[in-house]
Length: 417
Image (cartoon, rainbow, N blue to C red; front, side, top):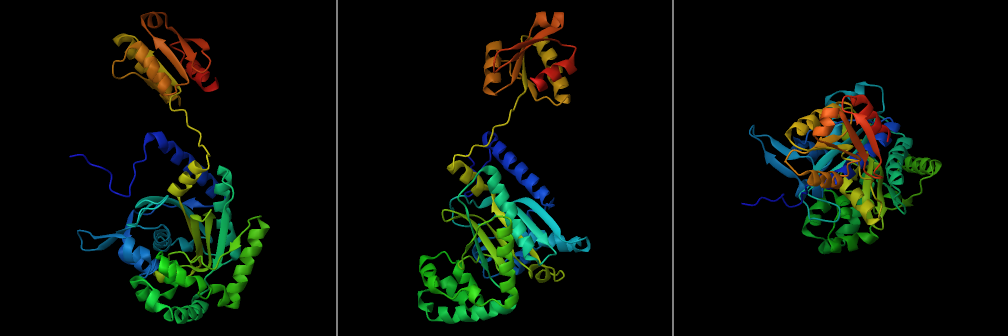
């Protein structure tokens, strides 16, 4: 039987994993500049965490979660997003007792049983940042700055930041009433799922992907017309801070995101209508899952979507040097010497290798060239007896005569040439 990766998943092979390392390292560096520390949460959580946090009427909870019962009879879900687990970790480990704000970042797989689409797999990966403990709009602008810094470092241009304000629970209720009144008149044209949403959470209808529903909501009331003075001031402050750091934006009333926990600020970064990244403020989520009433804001960035965008825009990620030195051996005695030399070089931080399948000298050289070795050396009886060998620099053929017993000198030549 020939096994294949499950539908919606993808192997990340050695030929491309270097791209992931490069992207992740850059993101770590940028997050660190903003004072963010890494957090790692479990791959699965209690199903109730996502029902209460993400929202029971969202597509994620209703249609997309990978949920199962474990051997203890508990309902467990592979995490479909990274925010709720980070919030749970913040509460459970009493990080709120530390000086605030708490700034966390993470890389995580996310699992959603959804229709395959561009840049999205059923197991995809997210880079996320969550900031707890501040209700200031300056923090909202700061996490948006992290996003834009990532794209700027890669040279991605022409992106649009779309922002909106969903309001607090008080003004949200006024908006929901107005939206429901509008949608009741259009009820017959809504899909079956949105019929249910109309009663429970009409805001989710704005996020429906069914074309008939998308057409209906085009003329629906917008949240910005119903926000209270406090939420309006927060939005104005956000715009002021974005302008202060040189980030342009588009006010987009149709940005609502697919998660129920958002309040006030909400945003998406778009590339020609394609959403690359999104996030917002979720001031009630920590309290909702049993913590204190602590404000928070964050975002999630799809790694696959970022890599796809880089590819489409012709932005190349530099390939690393996999082998610094490849030691070619001629016969069993020279192979032993090659193994000793390779081992010694590795302990000095050199990426070194030698033959392990009995190739001919010619085949070993061919393999070294294929692997992109920066240096090669051939060890035979003469080199072993004289304890002298020649190290060849592959890009120009220049050779260095060195002693087999001077490991430090060999290492220095490789590192400095």
